[in-house]
Length: 144
Image 1 (cartoon, rainbow, N blue to C red):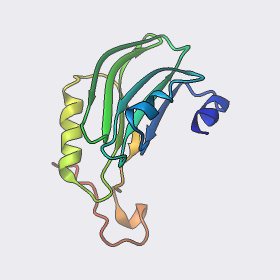
Image 2 (tube, one colour):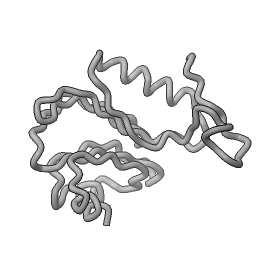
Image 3 (cartoon, rainbow, N blue to C red):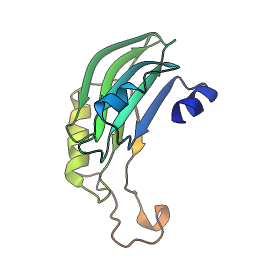
Image 4 (cartoon, one colour):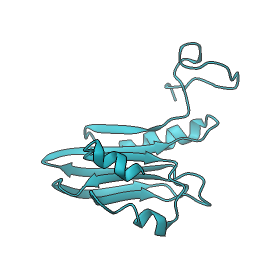
């Protein structure tokens, strides 16, 4: 159903999180409008992220980086003549500063490209403004 929804909305690029798919199931995403797919596969179907590109896009992929846990995929790409870094992430449900530090360090390894980042951060900047309920939510510490 997700591919049908993306097709109806005429999406050019889609960032999906919590795909929970095996390598074989991920390959099934390359249908309809999908031309290129960049993944970080989940271990034991617990996470998983993918970036899907419409088949009509002029796309060159220069470098791909992903973790072994299916938490993020980053790609240095040229899309229709625009050079940029795409990052799709799915952060752990319980705040993990080491995860965000690893993502930050990985991003720095790509240089000074314009960045488009999306995903499920599972964190808030200000719990009083951004979250109701759960007392264990901690704000992101941007100083580290």
